[in-house]
Image 1 (tube, rainbow, N blue to C red):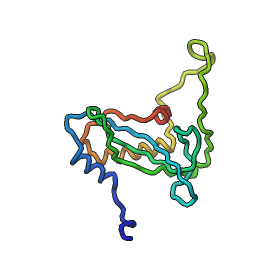
Image 2: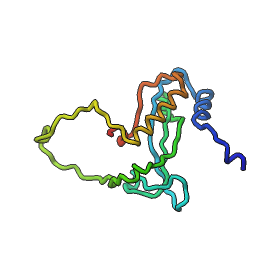
Image 3: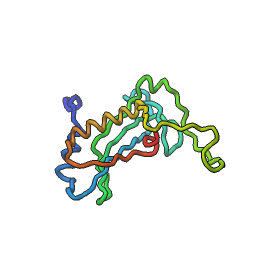
Image 4: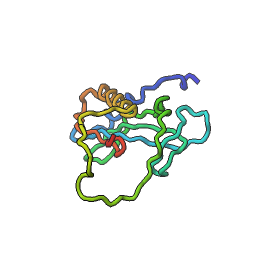
Length: 162
């Protein structure tokens, strides 16, 4: 029973294991992040909420986890280093966003739509999801302490377009 009350720093455990047993000094590594959603029945599980599943193309009741991994370009392997359960804040729960619908491509004329304005792309508005990811990345950089030169951050399309 005492084991269940023990806090284990999993990111540190994963990092030490990677550094000791899996790291190749000649490899180039990318930092990749992605969210995974798993279905879960019941009502008492911590973090249980409605999340969008891209595989099912709808909202499902389940758990969501965000993972940061080091990806070896030479070996073509991914090594998970940091995993956190996504717990929606009250603000995120209050914002009801419809599930994305896959629409067929509409035919448009060539060029830019009439009346569209230039957008300042240097102004980035960080959503709570992006702030959560930024916090995880900063924690990971403190952990690896410039051991690996990471130049690229790779996120899936949803995070990359926000």
